[in-house]
Image (cartoon, rainbow, N blue to C red; front, side, top):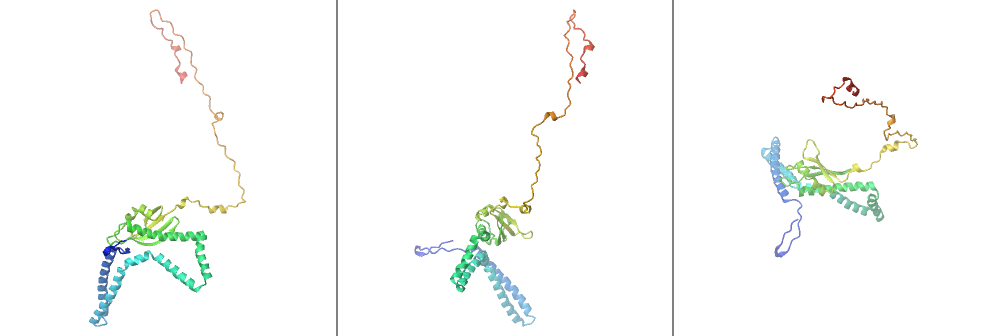
Length: 308
């Protein structure tokens, strides 16, 4: 939004930029190129085909007219493409608005006041009273919101190409955890440019997290964005197998197995251990008169086999 100042200190009303100036210049340049190329090709082909039946001068004039018409059509389409893309972004809201306005006018014109009030009560009361209908409408409303929030992300912090063209948002549908959106990248962008900013995209979409993946193995520009708001794996899901069990089936009584809580030593079979007997030691003999110890009797030596 930009403001301009008039003479004598008066300020003009604020102006809103619907299409960026960079995009307008790029579309104008592309439109001129498309017009010239299309006009030349169509003029030459038309004149060549017409020369077989008409005079060369008439064939040339016919080719020029056909080339100008074809070039004008192609150039106009290229020139208004930014406007067409903007209409595509707001197409669901525009369609819903026209449907509500013309539906209300047709309802009030061809029905009485009582019928009009009854229809409005049903249209407003059914979504508010029935949970599945309310959740269905809420999920699709979030799909519309996410498309616009992603467009804000692309224009704010995702780098566009040199022409200023943003990714084209295709379709969106609800999922059990949030929304899934398909986009098509223009030249100058890649998957890495989006995966490095998924945390900012989650904040902009009011979601828990955002996952960006390729949607096609052949086309690198076609991506799939999964906006996750809730985790369904944490919910309690009822099993349908419970309904297959007959409630009159008796419950079998199974004895509980005895679990040992302590070691019972009397139940352990073990052989008694016999320790070897040791002979008592004899007192030491008195020293001989010459001061030498008496010789030890070989028979009195301890038998080492008793210790084995």
